[in-house]
Image 1 (cartoon, helix red, strand yellow):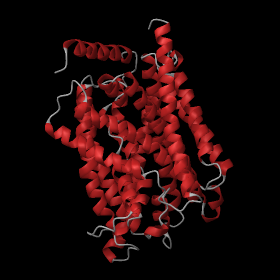
Image 2 (cartoon, one colour):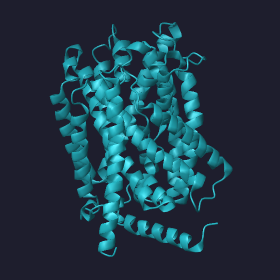
Image 3 (cartoon, rainbow, N blue to C red):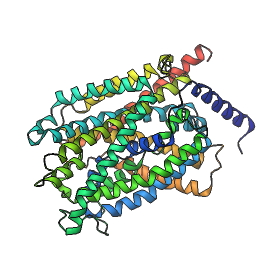
Length: 477
């Protein structure tokens, strides 16, 4: 049984978070959360990763949905119902496991979003190359072009984040709608090939491929990698218009979840209609599929450019939602005096954390440049993406542990089973993701970069937390 003093401390901490959240503008409706969730979770790159399995992809998506996606939804609905607080998973971990655990969760989520934003630069460059035509392939591996695109994107993201969600949410909505339209176009091109039996690769085969390290690695990415992010909307809990925040967050999960699962399963089948698994583009499989699907037709000159433009909008929307989510984490950690106060200071007019926004923009730009040094775009993309998702998986381990072992938790048996299932899939993903799924110059170097990066991030977090605590005790906080 949890003692009365601990429960009182929990309630006081919740009240303090709500007091700080009261200063934020309430900008988000249910529709905004659903569209934001779509581009926050559904990454087009995972269609290419799943396409590496060929027709057996269906037999991997189904376990991913039932062993990870649905269990994660159950756990997120449970925790957001208990603690509908600005900061989401950071607050859940802090209130149930203490300040150090909460801070490390926030740090890993921060690193996740910054690394994901950095990895999206490769997708943007790839989309530009498809739009520019067959002679623009040099753009993809040109580090100057990548750095220039990164600089422009970061400036735009900083501007939107400073203006606040009342502007940025329209950007997110546009990105979500662009992604939905792109999926519909992909399906329209693929259907005739299925009907006439001219698909390059059969879309579905009801047989599992051989159990190899590569296939298990891909399976982990199709589970945790593709479907993580359901907790993302909870980061904005303090900025939801409807006063019944927990119900709104639950509805966003229930409405958006099935659409995202359908996009992944049907979308992978669509790209296989045009591309063999060995030739799959892991960065922009949709652009590749539509370029091949429209070849020799009257749409050959239009479809690739239109697809690249739509994907460009979707990627920019995703980058913005990641960016706006991550700038909230230093803000809420600043409320707890674990980071400098200037990271939490709100703009007098727009009520946005300007210091946190600028810091995140600078960090994302630096990581983009460093991640692509001395490697090709595909390898640099995989290093950044894997590092981001491993950081995310560490935060998820804590999330699943809350209903399993945290004091004060009394979840139903179904929530506990869901947490165990999600935890198993997360651990499988985290372990196997240190190995590359593409040919790289130095596989050992690829793994070493990932391990050192993840270990360095968390070691720095522990050092900073202890230093911040000593400073807080010195000034009597």
